[in-house]
Length: 181
Ligand code: IMP
Ligand code: MG
Image (cartoon, rainbow, N blue to C red; front, side, top):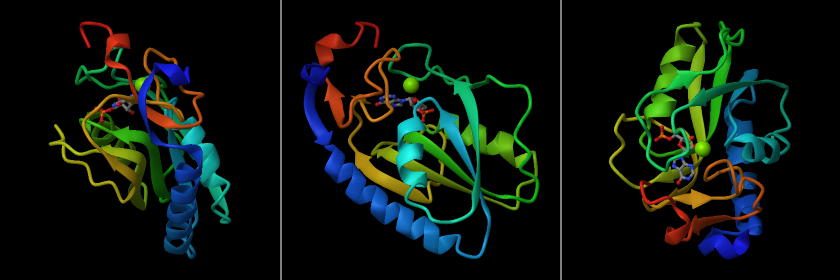
């Protein structure tokens, strides 16, 4: 798998060092409040597992599943919620975890949808944020790394559902992307 990468952006040690920092920041910010973490499947799974084990606070965890990509590398703009019921989040302090903030369409739609269930507060934490003009402006409160506008895989991020189990994050070789991508 690793030979499919054009170059590695962040190896596991670098990711773990950054997770230590973000976890410390989140733990300090939520010292006095009980957190409900909402992880966005599937991309945030590995990030979520490694981050939450670094946060020594009582918290609840729920996952939501949305689809917006349909196998390409460009967003279609439409966000489909795959479950009917939202988690019970009324009056809770929410922290939404996602893998990457690209166009912003997914996180904007998720935030909007979760806010209809009247949480007490909502913050967003992403592992990666692309340096670009986001189609919808989304404030991420915690960001692991800023990256250029390139297609990346690994550490939870996929291309056509592959590469999620790579321990590092890297740029996929261009010739492996479908011509329409
Ligand atoms: P957005 O709605 O464009 O901000 O991105 C939504 C989703 O697209 C993310 O949660 C990822 O699953 C996926 N995505 C965006 N950019 C990349 C990338 O560079 N590699 C892999 N997945 C990506
Ligand atoms: Mg994806």
